[in-house]
Amino acid sequence: MARKAKRSSKSAKRAPARKAKPKKAAARKPAVKKAAKRTARKPAPPYGYRSVTPHIVLRGAAQALDFYKAALGAIERMRMATPDGARLMHAEMQIGDSVIMMSDEFPEMNTGARAPNVLGATTGSIHLYSEDIEVLFSRAVAAGMTVLMPLQDMFWGDRYGRLRDPFGHQWSIAKQVRNMTPEEIAEAAREAFAAKG
Image (cartoon, rainbow, N blue to C red):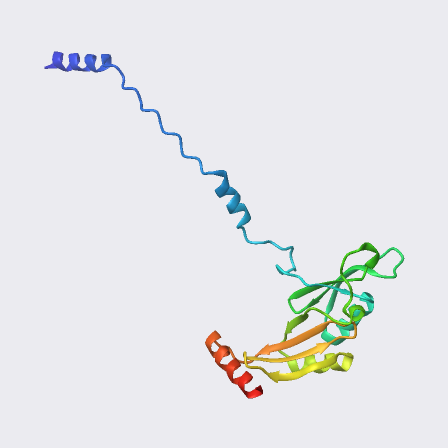
């Protein structure tokens, strides 16, 4: 038996080694998927900014910045004047957790942006939420804003009012007083418009 065992171990040594099957190359993910992942990443604004930041154009941006500090409690973050000091190329203020950028008009540079008090109109307004809405609204009016719509409870659940500042920009100031579903808002809107018609 010992001989047989030896023979079998020798024959095992002589047996040709099995060739290992070549490993399949790992399937490469198409470059398109990698590119899609890169573009789908969450936006990363610089610290202290939100994803969207309004940038308003004014005539008299330095005076406007001081006005917003008095009227709305804005905090000045920075201002950068032209070399002659006559206009602001860029300035930033913060109200609550949001930043608003601003600059003077530069019509000679063909920027296409004009101040609303020069145009005599504006295409939108800045919407501002506040917990102390009554106090903020009164403060803004006392500082020189014009009331376009007094504060009132609206059908969509906000207490809401509209103002225009001396530089032509419109501001809507609001506080949510009722948390409503889209269906509740639609029904309240039908009632509100029926009452006016």
